[in-house]
Image (cartoon, rainbow, N blue to C red; front, side, top):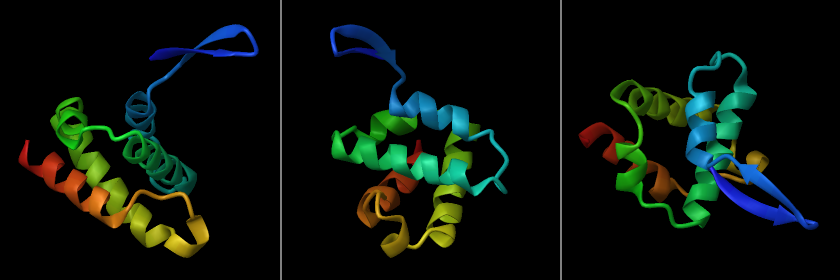
Length: 101
């Protein structure tokens, strides 16, 4: 969680990783949650989050669920249609780190 000021009002904003953790337990059939996970991963890539730290901040089961959601999301969403997705290299490297930690 971090704090940002918008129009002079200080707000607490959840980190992308905390949002992802919350989405991992949602029903897989509700595809929008997977889209949200991919969007948050794109934000993390844009902000240069460290892949090893991301993987370390997830439990073993969360890492497994994230790998599943990445695979599911790549099948469910076309890169052309979806637009705001992390790069293939980022996803491949993240999945690898989630598997080896």
